[in-house]
Image (spheres, rainbow, N blue to C red):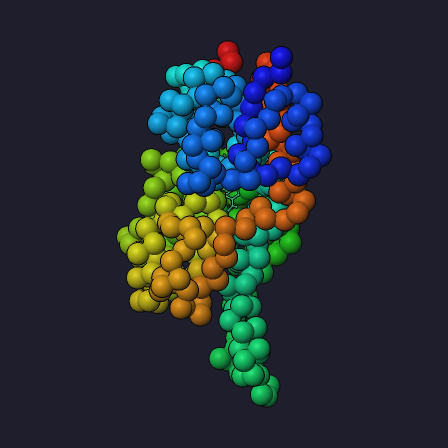
Length: 324
Ligand SMILES: NC(=O)C1=CN([C@@H]2O[C@H](COP(=O)(O)OP(=O)(O)OC[C@H]3O[C@@H](n4cnc5c(N)ncnc54)[C@H](OP(=O)(O)O)[C@@H]3O)[C@@H](O)[C@H]2O)C=CC1
Ligand SMILES: O=CC(=O)O
């Protein structure tokens, strides 16, 4: 008999069919209050699950006594209780390689659109404000040959540095807990302590995981270190930033603008002061939202689940100690 698994997000038809070749699949488009009882019932028999967008904590896992593998269609895994998964010998798989380049494109788009005020001026054109040659009320700031500070020089940070350094002639400085010799060699990147990076950067780009260490890493004291001409970009996770401190920094003109793909609360409340600021570009967590990347992520997640349940894991495992 084939093992039972749950797909808790709609998969492309060919990938769903691939999953069914290996497993008996119970599928949900997404998990809602209405179908949660059916999901919990299916969890009682499931050896694996694949999907995204739910919190997988101890309470949920208590309903999955047979679980051996969970495969998330995402790179980040802050919505998973990894310690409990590991204690219960459940492997957690993720899809980092499938989206790296796409997310780096998104961050570069945020850099360009904040500095050159693309969203703001485009809205003004649409509202009929363009009536003659533009004066400095329409001007932005250069991106090329400025200094980009990358906080989190991992896979995505590296792909961003590639674009910024070779495409835009930017100087790259970076902060991580351990040095990244590859970044230093390829992009002449210079490692800085966080506070020094903040003081030197024209663009501060955060692409960090959310952990106990990174929660509210950017707070009022840290925003105060940035140059008033500098732009702040966050595409990692919302709670890495104390959003109230960011709003204060913008309102007090301690920084020039912000480009944000992620927020403390998602979707962001429509009443947030961030949405009323012309120097803020807010996008709805679309870092990886292209047809190509989302397909590649789903494909990677399906392959990850098949590998995990057949004892054939080669990559993409968050807690490899479970299989040692
Ligand atoms: N907006 C979106 O759609 C997407 C967002 N993401 C987010 O981006 C994050 C990063 O992805 P990816 O680049 O693939 O991950 P990686 O694991 O490759 O990189 C993470 C980087 O963060 C650094 N880091 C971790 N903790 C700290 C810390 N306390 N201080 C400084 N640096 C730290 C790591 O270096 P070191 O360990 O040496 O400190 C590493 O360089 C994901 O975890 C996810 O949250 C990912 C995909 C899409
Ligand atoms: O935020 C998206 C992810 O893949 O992580």
